[in-house]
Every structure is written in structure tokens, then in C-alpha cells.
Amino acid sequence: MERSREVVEPAYRRAVGLLPSPVDRVAGYHAGWWDADGRASDAGGKAIRPALVFAAADAAAGPHVPSVGLGTAPAAVTAAGVAVEMVHDFSLLHDDVMDGDTTRRHRPAAWTVFGRGQAIVAGDLLLTTALGMLPGPEDVPAAFAQQARGVLSDAVARLCAGQADDLRFERCSSVGLEECLAMADGKTAALLQASCHLGALAAGADPHTASCLATFGRHLGLAFQLVDDLLGIWGDPSATGKPAGSDLASRKKSLPVVAALTSQTPAAARLADLYASPGALGAHDLAEAAAMVEQAGGRAWAQQEADRRLGSAFAALDAAGLPADRQSALRTLAILMATRDH
Image 1 (cartoon, rainbow, N blue to C red):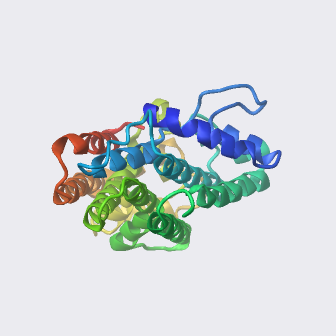
Image 2: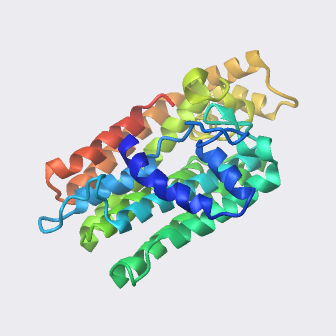
């Protein structure tokens, strides 16, 4: 991930430098390149999505296509890496505004520093720029140029639909587990799927290989979200950068919570009462809510489902029939993403 950041960040910085002021400052702050006063900083994200682009491109490179490598990455792979990271940052900027989250990556969220309007505009321009980052038919084969735009546009549409469902769930008295999984499939898995798909296409993969790697990314995305939801309840604040039990405090209907609420157990009934109670949940309430999620089986289900989705991701990778040495980076990233603590 660090090596992919070294390749992607210079191109990302150049693109942000072309944005109008003060939006460029907002975008750079959110990306972690400088603080609120414009002083150099290193508070960026993990760059998981660009890393998946590069790893998928290396995995998909056939016997007559040289390994992409991060030092000499072809323009199409680098552009795809920048594009997916921009889309990710667009979604985070907007999510923080919509959810009212005040921290991001261990420091104040961009909207709390520059205002809601500037954060929204910065996200809008990042999305527009991302879609324009993908090379046109004058730079790469026309088939790739056309497919890549379709893949990224579809991912953005699914991501936005997933976010809309997530917001809708806040007003629903009950949410089904399949509904919640479908929301996560859009909000999180869609862009991870696109990252793997774009990397494969940029390496000239055949349709079967590209499809298998896209499926790998989709299952990995769901495993990633399940782990994220577990950390939202039981994560260490010093590692996650968010207060303990932050998802419970906002009464978020995350996957472990929905699994617990639909368990038809006494703990589920008590959890429903806590979620329906007026006013803010205090420290005692949050501790009890976390205990109810666990007693109702939500924690165990989420961990088991994350493990199952990781297994499905690896099965899709096996179905691609790629040499073991070309799969290693994707497998390592997948394990890291499914066992992380932040």
C-alpha cells in the first residue's frame, strides 16, 4: 500500500493542484497532505483501492504481458489507481457531512474545518476529476477506454445507491439483514470490485480473468465492511481514530447490529429499546448496547460472515487460474483487510 501511494500520490497532487481555490486546499487537507493552515502533513489514508488496482494488474498480466510493477506502472494502471482513490475521497467527504462525523483519520473532518458547503463542493470536483482521469482511446486501446469508464461509472452509481439506503435505514424502525448486505454491497464493495476490475482491464486481461478478479473484489469488499462494522463497535479508539462505540452512539444499523436486532432474542428486544430511547446514549448505555449485540449473536455472525466472504474471494481468485506468484499480493492485501484493527 505504501508503494502504491508513492506512485499514485504525485498524479493525485497534480490533479488537485488544478482545482480552483479554495477547493484545492480542502481536497489536500482531506487527503492528508497538509493541515488546516496549509502546513505539510502526512495524515493520508491507507490507499487500499489503488493497491488493489496495481495488485490486480500484476495478477492479470499474461505470459506475454510484463508485470506492471510499481516503479514503472503503465499510464492506464496509474490513472485507474488515482481515479478510484479520488472516488473514495469524494464518498468520504460527503459521508462525513451527511453522517455528521467530526473526525476522519485521527483529525477533524474537512467539513468541520472548512464548512459543509466547501466539503461538498470538494467532493463533487473530485468525482468529476476522477471520471476524467481515465485515459481516452487516443492513449490506450479504445476497448479499455470504453470499458473502464463504464466500470467506474457503475461503481459510483452503486456506491451512491448504497449511501442512500444507509441514510434511509436511519429512519426505518426495522431493517432486514439481506437489505443491509445489499447496502454494503453498493456502498463499500462496489468500489473495491471496480478497483480489481480496472487493474485487470489495464493489464489486458481476458474477460474471464477480469470477471474473476472483479468477483474477488466484490466479496473482499463485503468482508472489509463487516470488519469495519465490528471495529465501529469494539475497535480501539487509539487505532480507529473514532470514539469507542461510535456506530452505536449514532444508532447506526450496521451489519452486526441488524444481525442482532433480527435474532428474535431477549437481547435483541433490549437492543431495540436502547436504539428507540430518546436522547443521547451515555457510556453505560453504549456498553450495554455492545453487550446486547454480542449476546444476540451479532458479533459472532459478522465475524463468521467476514470469514466466509474472504473464502469466497479466494475461490474467485482460484477460478481465474492465475499463477500462484501473481496472486500473492492480492491474497496478502485481502488477509490484511480482513484482519485489520483500524
